[in-house]
Amino acid sequence: MGVADAHTTRTNLTQWGMREGNPLLGDHPSAARTYGTIAAANAVAVAGAWQLKRKGKRYWYVPMLASIAINAWGIERNLNGRYDSSVRCTQWSDGRRECR
Image (cartoon, rainbow, N blue to C red; front, side, top):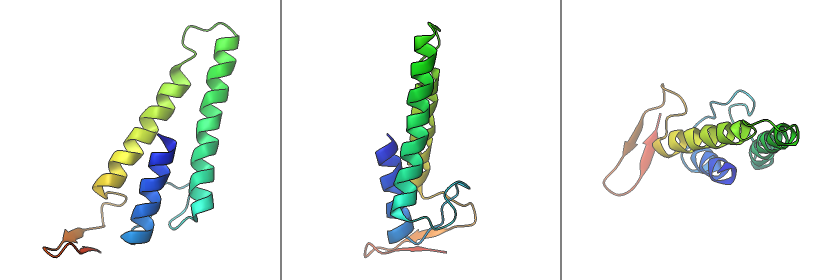
């Protein structure tokens, strides 16, 4: 899920000229920063789940579920082009897309 989130983020930034809404990434993050930050966040979720499972907690899977939910939300927002409520996009009949 993290790779899909990062990929859709990069696509919107490079092809549509949109801005990133995540304050950890900044308005126009590089590819390395995008993939690195998302990979680090997912690694933290895995480490947290592992620690909880090691301690025998029944809710050890919650960090992973949260990570999946956050990435799914990011993908949904990326595919709908809603980084910023002030951005308005127009799809032209010739296939062009213009965002302001």
